[in-house]
Image 1 (cartoon, rainbow, N blue to C red):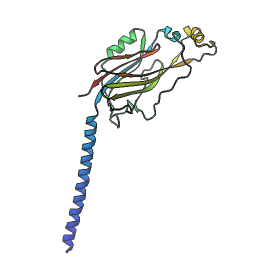
Image 2: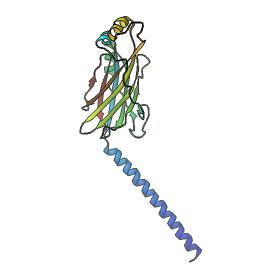
Image 3: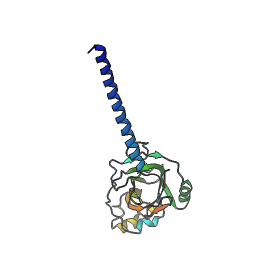
Image 4: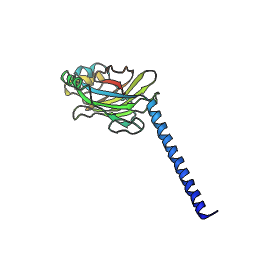
Length: 219
C-alpha cells in the first residue's frame, strides 16, 4: 500500500475520531440542557425585617444558645449563572412593601430578588443570605426552594441584635440573670418550612423579626 493511501486513511481516521468527540460533546450539552429544562425555575423575592417594638424582647424567655444555620456548600445570591442553582439577579417587585415596613415600626435589613432552579427533593441546595443594609442587626442564614407536588421554601436564619438599653433590666429579669450579667447582644432564629403558592406573598412571623417571601414561575 502506498504512503499516499496510508496517509489518506490516517486523515480519515483522525476526522472520524474528531467527529465522534464532537457528537459526544453535542449530546452531553443537549442532555444538560434537557435536564435543566425539566427542573422548574422560579423568581424568588425575600424581605427580612426587624420588629422595633420593644415588647417582643420580654414576651417570652429566649434561649441563650441556639442552633446556628448550616451555611456550608450554600450558594450566595451574589453569584451568577453557576451550577447547581444558576442564580440570576432579578428586579425587585416589593419595593413599595419595603417602604411601608420602614414607616410602620419595622426596619428592613435584607431585600433581594433572584431566579433559581427548584429541584424536586428536599436535598435541594441552599442559598446563602446576609443582611445587605448598612443599618440594623446582623443576619445570616439560608433559603431553600424546592418543588415536589407543590413548591416549598425553607428558612434557617439567625439574627443578632443589640439589647435596647430601655428594656435591659426587664429583659435580664425575664431571662433570670442580673443586668450586669447580660451581654450587649442576643441571638434569635427562625427555622421554618412553608408550602408556598406562586404569586402569593407569604409572611413568617417572630416577635423580634420576620420574613416576607414571594415566588413566581419563570416562563
